[in-house]
Image 1 (spheres, rainbow, N blue to C red):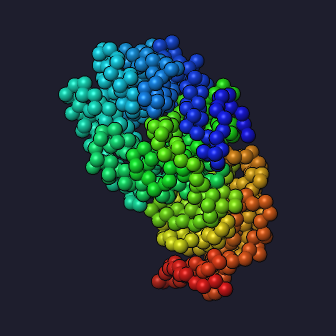
Image 2: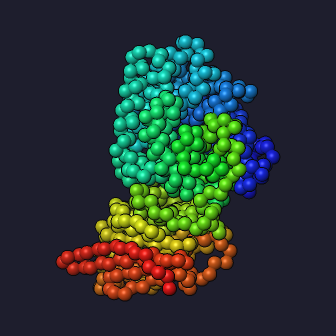
Image 3: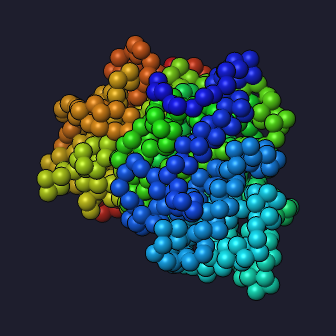
Length: 624
């Protein structure tokens, strides 16, 4: 385990038997992070120029504003959660920065904040500043000179009309508008603020797909932005506004979402490694705290704290904070494979959202209840999530959570969206390691393995999920049936010519993990890729199976067993009891994976010819 420079209280294993951590640990970490960034502020404290990497695509000045805004949000949670107590003077330095940064915004001086323009990064940071000001209003905003408030309102007001990207960005004007409407500094500004709130909430409404899930925009983009953006901002706004109708609407959606969301954390505390902006790390815990804060959660208080503290400790124990107390750009420690062009040195400080829990008073049950195990620690489970097109598979013996992705896609951020599998102990190989090096099935076309695109969910049920996708102009049908740590992977090549090479890859696993593939039908050779770098290891190994399509429909069918496990001595995958796969007829796959009482059998039938037909069915059968 890595060392960090923060001085923490002694562990309390009676109250927190899983992590040892309490509210006092969260407060100590918040203080440590805020003290560590102070030396990097400009003289007027308006910009924070943090080290740790090259500037983002928005440039150093915008990055400096990002450093101010995101650490201010952390200070706001810390002070507001303490009822205004601020022995370290955090709010004083952010009040000074607000004064300095808004004197000549858009200028070239060392303190000048950039202007908020259409689709600009300052629009994002304005939301964090507005939220922080709203949370700390009695102790900061209400005590500012009128001139400073006027200048701050003027700067923030540009966010009310700035054009947002068609995604979670629509909620940044909502957050700014919520604050400006509450302060009521001017009638005209208030009307514009209320309009911005209504407009932004209207724009995200078509993206709510049901069962607690939003897409991050009009396409099928599903990841952690559901929790730390799509739910966070509307629910916080409703809670802060005291609007019972809005809180019922958005809070009830959050409660439904958390039932699924709690399953995305492994037994070691790790959140699932999928989606972009993963350098925000423990921001993944924000919706857990938000549910407890607003009374919209199905989780017991001890489960909420166990999952949240487990994630915070997971990252601190693995080097997320360097010797100077700064969050690095990466996952455990520095790692550029999880970054996007908008990532800058201060970007990781959106991890501040993790400290939403400090808004809960010390006497709240979420802080006083004894920790309880999370879902991944209790029992093996396979859970279908039809809305995002995911199948979650977890095993209690090793605490590993696996996600089989048959519905989320965003080619801009491949490989973080479009691989067929993600987990809490592995990460996708980066693009420079070769196209789709892990958890991918596709044909070899023009000398390279065809990428996965145009993913179409085909169904999900008890222990299984299916989809179709495009692979270089060829349509592929994929089905996964899961039980315990084992998977049955079925692939049908619909449009391929005879003799087309195909390849299946498994999990990119490092030391202490077993990643395996076993051929059942259609594959003729096996091998592996090794020495690959991921966010978890510099020496990942990926198992590989290869084959070729044939003339008959059954010769376009490829079936394998797969497994990712952290167990020390798992039984041979080839002899795994309880998972059976047969091909009873050409173009048909029949697979079953029973538990001790019953089995789920998945059948894939495909008929080629003038009237092509595909049918995927499942049924429960008695084990034998």
